[in-house]
Each structure stands twice: as structure tokens, then as C-alpha cells.
Image (cartoon, rainbow, N blue to C red; front, top):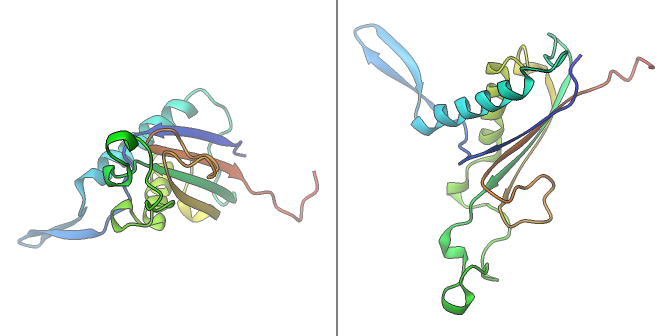
Length: 167
């Protein structure tokens, strides 16, 4: 049975990109279209493995229902801040939420985290995740739960109890 796991990882979040087929002469393989994807995934794996190394009963057994909450915190673009006497202050015209194309799709950000949790052997298979909450925020967002003061991601992994069993 898995216990709740909470891990915070600093860095520049990257979503799971598309796969492309490369190769020739009958030898092909699928590779990520964005090289930063593998680096961010490896960073998540390193951090998660470092936390779970000393914990007992953290690995989610096959078919155990799991919930995952992911909060991705992104750096605001420089254009969102004022200049001169307003330097360092977010402009009123700046969007509150990271909805611009370059901030990444919330589902692709979550997919990469789920794959990394499987790589880190926290999950047997990400198919056992039955509940996902994935959100993204800017570093200066005090209203989003688990938003960080720096770019990165906070991941919560928790068991989902079977309602048919009383404890």
C-alpha cells in the first residue's frame, strides 16, 4: 500500500512532447521531438528516487488505485513586468494564468510526470492512476494551491481507498 508522497522539484518544467520516427534501412525508433523532455523527466526521476529510497511501503502495487496531484509553476515572461519605477511589478494587463502557447499543455505536463513516476518505480503502470489533478501557475500566484516561489513542480501521490472496504 502506498503512503502519500509529496515531492517538490525545482527547474524548468517541460511537457511530454510528440514522438517522431527516425532511422533508415529498416531500423527505426521513436524519439521525443523535444530534447529537453528527457532531461526534465530524468530530473523528476532522480528527485523522486532520492526521496523514496529510505521509505518502506511506498511502491504502489499492481492494480492499486492511485491519485496524483501536479502543480507546475512557471516563470513569468519579462514582458509581464513593468519597467523603470514599475520594474519587478506584474503589469495589470498581464494574464493571471499561464495560458499562452509557450507555457505548455497541462495534459502534456501531467503525462510526463506520470511517466517519470513509473520510471522511478513508484507506480507499476500509470494506468493505475484513477484520479489526476493537474494545474499550472506563475511563480507569483498566491492563490493556487502548491504553487512554488520558483519554477518547478510539486507532485502529490496518494492512495485511493476502495469504498467497499471499511477500515
